[in-house]
Image (cartoon, rainbow, N blue to C red; front, side, top):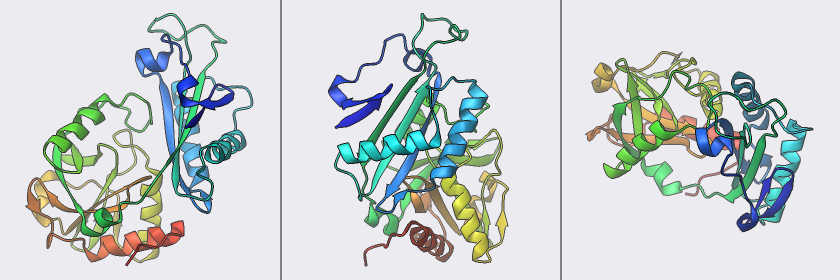
Length: 286
């Protein structure tokens, strides 16, 4: 496997980051994951815009010449170097504030940032997409700026592991009695035939796939409410699904051990799943 690190594509085992890198010491950085389809980078501009917003909000420096075109070029070089051209894959990008003696304040001006990128093969778990998964609700213990895609993911990791230990796929995070999002996904709920999801604010990540799904829902004439589903409304949930860069539209058929609706993927979920796959140029196997 070959990766990109600070201007060079090299074998993974040769890549070295300083132990004083602030991403290692503080989680001081942002990241982005972009889906790669046979047709190319999917939703490239949307991922770039989210990355740029995170860079601005965290006041991160960027390498010389850093641009969408530069990231695209490196992505294609990594795909080629790893034999992934024309295949499904993901490209991971991480930018940190660089290496400097440990201090909570920002390092001196001019400290070079650290830019790391990698490409990995991806296979859609078609059976999982077709049959659905289970989830459980857990307290949302994250900080107050969940809208920034930082590498500080410890609360997400703990929630994901708790879900795994419980034998379910995802944790639905709950704050002040409402579902914000999943540990690594956006959450959608269907009630009375209408689609509900948490509005964009500091409590959720502005998901790229979330926005595409909302657009597709409106194109299909669905009633859409950007308002969070409440825990007390669980008995009204007709359908639940997750969305994300590597999750696409993933039906949820059980929450907290109880069936959602009829305990199988519902019509709204399946229609949006088909629409997203069509937008991506993919076709589910029969």
